[in-house]
Image (cartoon, rainbow, N blue to C red):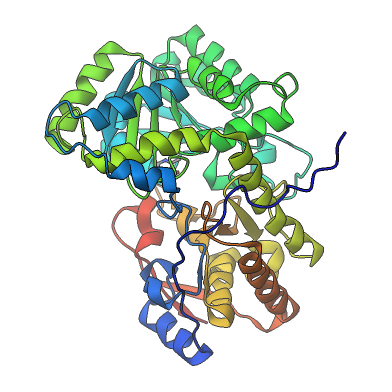
Length: 463
Ligand SMILES: *Cc1c(COP(=O)(O)O)cnc(C)c1O
């Protein structure tokens, strides 16, 4: 093989956005003002923002120039047809309904596929679908493989896979009519941006066919999932990314997408489907809630940017850079002995809060404490995905139920930060890790009414 000296980013930087450095005293004030909730901090007070990868991508010169072509006609605009063609190409699905964000697609999908008192099975449901299901009175049930709930199971390449036996048990116990839909989230955000294998998507689809249950893919990170299939699943190493994405979606009847992730844009969502009846329903629901069928709450220029972004996200040189940048952060943290979810996933590194702060019990929010420490030391914003975000309550006794995974997610925005920025995160976490014994836990002092969404508005105090 020829040596490869072209291992840097497959782009250069044309526009820059200054970020503000801060003092520890300013950061402590900001934390107090936000009740120690990262969602309530002002973005301008953040030095490196790893709260989420959602809507934070840097667009390309191709995308910015496409935006000038935006056709803002109410009905039948050119920009819609470009988006439709691009989405058909990537998903291999005939029908395309834009929405203003992924959660609007979730909402419309949930109204059709989730039913009161019936199970919605999945690997791990995303929180906005969870919230929608909660409002409908459906029972969202996670059926991810056990290894997916074990932060240290580093040898498992597809920790987003669904355990078919867990679904079988529910069908055997409650009957096939107790399940109204199976939703596969690719990649699986809740346990580390972990991919789902093609073999597993195929097996879920066969299971569902047997019991006549529809399958939906929640596909915000479809290109990252396809890249993991290409690099980890035998038989796919020589297939182009779009051939892999099309095969993934050949096993479901409908998919939703938050285009704020692998769409490489700052806003937008999609519903794609091969179910004619659902498409008609989605068109009607879009008109009531989103906008006319051919824009669904998106402007023409945003649809132009998305049409281009979907294609760029499926480019191999981009994905290679993307997945390996996130892996770089994971590898460097591991070198420092910092416990992370392994293997590193697609859109961020998840630090294991329990192993980081073994002396802080889960009901005192160890991962949230780490979020606060990282901001206090370095102005770096990450997010808790543990006791607060995924804690639930026993429906009968109201007793808290603590989640199996207790992590702090460090999201890496697409095409935004350099490895120098990532090195700052490593240095700050290393510093905190060496002083880990000096930290105490936190107390939850405010939560909103919808449990699945409490992390967005929660308030804390330091113990
Ligand atoms: C982000 C996301 C959503 C919600 O999409 P928004 O665009 O934030 O409304 C739904 N599902 C998954 C898997 C997501 O990552």
